[in-house]
Length: 258
Image (cartoon, rainbow, N blue to C red):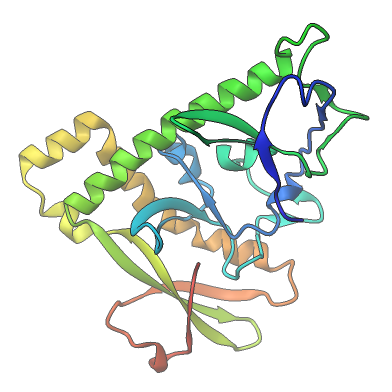
């Protein structure tokens, strides 16, 4: 279903309610989900964290790699969400924070199956004030905005220090099929190790150094994609990071992640 985000308004939406969905079914078709800096510690133990370049803005953003094909989230099954960690960008739905003129405002997907007037949590009280439920959502969205602002600073540091490094994944399926996934980036540990002491100290004090190593260690979670794929019609036998110099024709046709 297409998303229809509109500015949340206490007059226009005073009768709206929002249902909770612990299965997080709205994320089942998202193979890439944004992850913000303050989530890195938990996220790195659950999902590979990669850098994706937005071709329209020429900027990188950090995302959890939840699937290897567009429209397929391997972390979601008929039983629901299969991980101990769910990004705030998934939890926030059906809400979002977006620019509204010179300020940020809360938007809501009015066409979401979670939104209606029949059942769920009230957004506003009878006097028009914000409900306790909406207050908790506002706090979550504030935390997300603050964390995403910090993430942008983190990514800028990676770019300024020339630490962004292209990665290529070699995927072998149980049926013998092989393919390569490109369009992904990570942090060059080799270049990171060559930074001078002053740069390393600055990164450490900003908290960015720990975040960098969290991203690097998260690549060990590629095995979770293998594990979760076993419930699909095309289970994966293995995923490995390939040398950058290996051409796609040497193993299989390459496909872009985004």
